[in-house]
Length: 100
Image 1 (cartoon, one colour):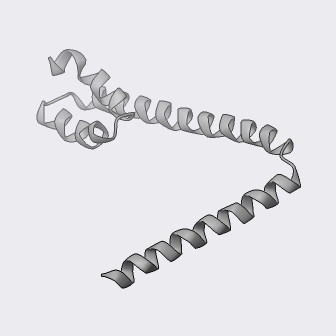
Image 2: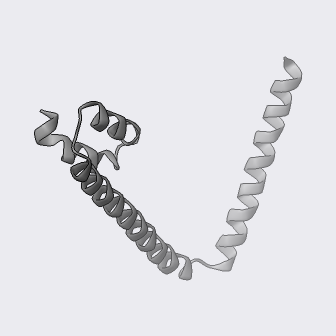
């Protein structure tokens, strides 16, 4: 089974956290040919890195367009609200720590 689908497992293993860790040792244990492993691993790495860069780039473009419409008043309100919430959380944590 691994002889037939091992390359795909290594390639797509880049996209799954646990499989990313286990793909190399599993390929070695199953005696996958090194050139096939190297090709699948390099292709998976290039696809993963390229996909990550493309996703972050797209997210940045969307965030930039959204933030251009964001007013300074809303920014001030968001910062003040964030400070109030963090102050409230800190007070609750200190109260919980003093109760113990």
